[in-house]
Image (cartoon, rainbow, N blue to C red):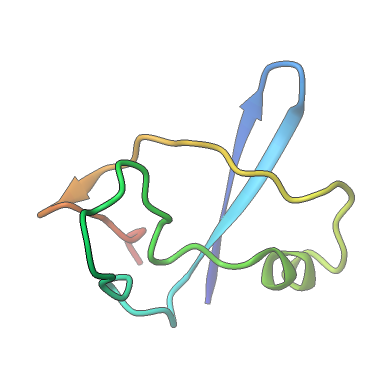
Length: 79
């Protein structure tokens, strides 16, 4: 199941992203120091979001968000 979120970006308009409940709760660990900005472990890819919306105008972009976390990992959306 996808949970679709939206946010307004000044100068750019509405931006959408989605969480995919089928993805693992934690992203795979990589050797070395943890990056300061990490991808959300539940973030759905652009293709999955476009398919859920039956097509989507615009190009994918990356946006840095501060999200609620527990033990260093972002929380998933409640059911």
